[in-house]
Image (cartoon, rainbow, N blue to C red; front, side, top):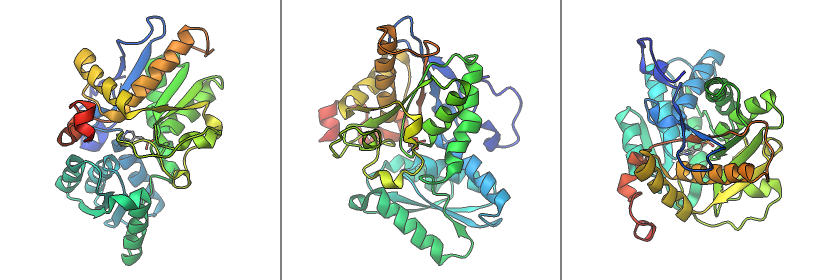
Length: 326
Ligand code: PMP
């Protein structure tokens, strides 16, 4: 189901049921389908966890009615949480490292949230620490903490994954998705492996990220430009379950950005760098299946395009890589 046929009572009801679209590139006999999460009201995959986590936290009493949620975020989660918080009668504060896109920070503020910046050099760990400090100062505040909250994975297990399986009538041979918190991939992987334990699961990270070390691979830690995926410190990414993952594919910034431009020009997808990386890795998996190097239960690859390039225009996402990174 890719349509929203019934009139909705609130924007929260329009989250999810996003389209699944076949990519026009890649081997002819191994289709790759991308779930277009830009169709959510906040234009990213994180609207799903925003709604899911806050509804469950209110039900469980983890945050009181009218309370405040404080979250360290690169931005998309802030937007998703801000939409849900506003609809559910909660206040929201987001702690964002300075390097992340200004568009996202403006959108969080537009939704009524307070945005606090932490220094880029302190990384996401600095933002996480600051969020907890702030929460300790208020008595009605809670930190959803997408990096360690199992509700993040559960949101995708309950919504993203069944939508994919329904759309493809269960014909899913490989799942390929970028890992930031890893909630997206883990939720879909857990569901997919329950349907068929032979489903091939690939995590995608930028070159310079160290998720691969969790599968015993060598990784050289370095800076990267691809936004929303990867980690420099696997200790903070508690949701990543190595036993569910067959491989961690590292995609260079250059390849991810060349691909997001190709996706726009040749396929009409206005998606960002993490989608570019996911597309590159998906094509590699599809080629291996096509060449007979990889056996999967169905010769179909599924991936996720998490957000839109519009969110990164001020960073020059469509400029040449050299211009953009200088
Ligand atoms: N792409 C973008 C643009 C994101 O903001 C995120 C979330 N950090 C992801 C991909 C990865 O999603 P997840 O956190 O579920 O691994």
